[in-house]
Length: 467
Image (cartoon, rainbow, N blue to C red; front, side, top):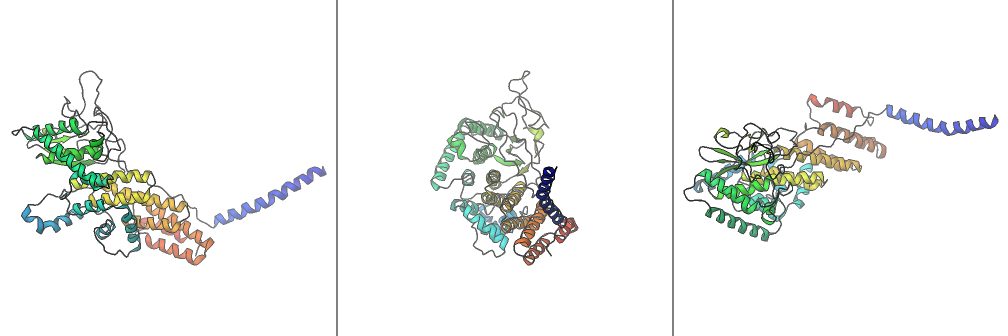
């Protein structure tokens, strides 16, 4: 019996201190507000189309989280007499189509077009991130695109630089191959051919001589078709637009949230062209109003049904043949899609500096690309979360501050900023003192917009036990 009592006493001696610690911890928790996990932002899907050799589907299954803005207006080429006096107006129109959330001066300085000194700390940090991620060839691209059209570079050359070409010799080789294909395709078109006949001739040449390999989602570079025959919807559209325009056709690139394709004006017809589908003009039937998701090409099915052919008079002027929010693009904006795709991959691989730079470059070339802006915010947000995970709260706050300046009400940004600054303030209260913690809380309150939608976040910050 005494042995049992002694055993109980030893057990109580062990458990009592543990219980005291638990009670103290519980009491401390009562004096603190609960902290939530910071929320990551999912990046939007790449533009590439869906791979099928038989044109089963033409777009990715993943759709963007946000609707695209109104179609961006392509900048037309002025006449030679008017070019010099209207260049500034064209540049202003090109840059003012859709706000990117970043001052134009910051964009130009970050990309090396201007040498103005950026004094505001958040924007100066962005410039410091993008400058090392921008090559001399890229600066040539941005300088050429500054008026909204390609003047000294061709569309494939600019797209190749965006895709990663860093040597001028590669661009020279690309230019020679482009001129070779333009000459060869021209020889196969009769002098009296109609616009529709020229269109089909160019399209068949493209698939017979350039797009000779397989579809690959990652084959965004225009060099891929030339060296390996591989392509996706972006590289295929770049080459189709180049040949078609050089051979006298009026072609307009179109972009849905996850796909790129074309519309060609053939006079009495406005023809939709799916550049990735070699059989596009050989399909015997059409299925108006259906999207690729529910109008599959049934190559092995009976009855001769061969899937969607969306072209011809009944689709004239329709900007949305696939049931998605399509928008027209200029050739300059099409190159922005290459940077956009690179930005998607960079975010997924957690190469955040590259992701921020790629999406800023995409926005400079294509201010109407809302998904590029969303992915820029995702890169900044997720980069901040990575820094906060390492308790580098100052660096995390830098990224979230910039994201909030671009779009203060976007997704989880206000909640993440509130939670990040709360963690930072509590950390400082425990390590450096109440003064520093209070200053951080005050900064967070100033960053939140003043309207009532953010009252909950403000109340949370004011209730923190650091003042």
